[in-house]
View 1: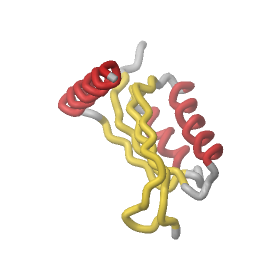
View 2 (view 1 turned 90 degrees about the horizontal axis):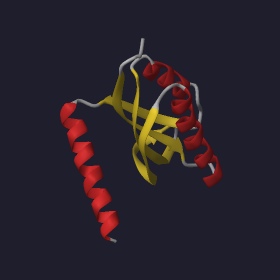
View 3 (view 1 turned 135 degrees about the horizontal axis):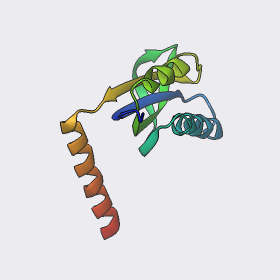
Length: 119
């Protein structure tokens, strides 16, 4: 029986004290974890290092990563649990996308693709 996949927007903050190679390794590890567990990555957008609104574990800066994925619903709890025990991740937020959010994502990705093609 094929499990129904849902679309999620997933944002997480990596500890910016890490080196560039370590941050890249963390992003690749999370992406690989999603793909190995029957997930499909739609897009990954690395926002880069930014100042946090408030200190988290006495840290003032973090490296933001936003990604869109299609995964089975029961996988989200496993992903969040793995991030809870990972000291390199400061915070994360997982949003299940409804029809309106999906339409907005698709239209913005089409617009971005058209702009990239025009350049």
